[in-house]
Amino acid sequence: MQITKEFDDTAAWLKALTKGLPVAIMPNSLAAEVLGESSNAISKKVKKGDVAVISIGKNRYISADYVHDLVDKGIQRKALIIKGLERVARNGSTIFYGELMEMADMNWKSPPDRAKIGAILGKISRESYEEDGILLSSLVHRKGPEPTSPGPGYITLIEGMSDDYDDPDLYDEDDLDAVIGRHMEAVWEHYQAQ
Image (tube, rainbow, N blue to C red):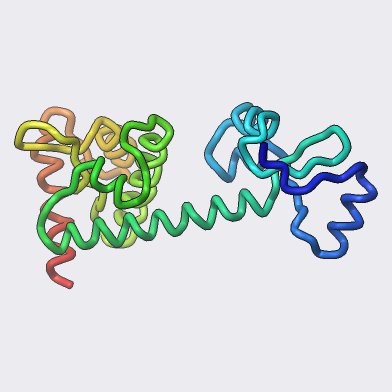
């Protein structure tokens, strides 16, 4: 149980809050939005004490500082992943999901970590497409027989982006291998030109 601070009542909590102590709380729905989880999942974590909790009387709330720390860690993790992918791109190679996840202190066997890496890579590709016209996550592949390729999440991403950006070159269901090859070549070309 991660109860960060306990207060007998709201008055005691307000007194600590006005003194500038780290006792800010967040509604579960806001924490869920920020962390990309469901409100129900956050509520369960608060109830079980799986997250840092501020207890006021009989009520428990998620600590805003805890959520802030998780957001900061997420930003740092994303920057680490981008840096790793840029290195892979400069080398003209690809990387397997498991290797990338290990580099980012994630476990490829963990379904929540696999969901997180997918969301991070989706954001990275949208940003790299908007900034440079490339899809940086095209270099992240599933292990398997050669030739390897990105996973189904990447296919869903490029299909959606093709519609979002009205760019038919992003996705062609009939020739996915060629499309992915063009995405990879564009990334390698971009980073080798720098």
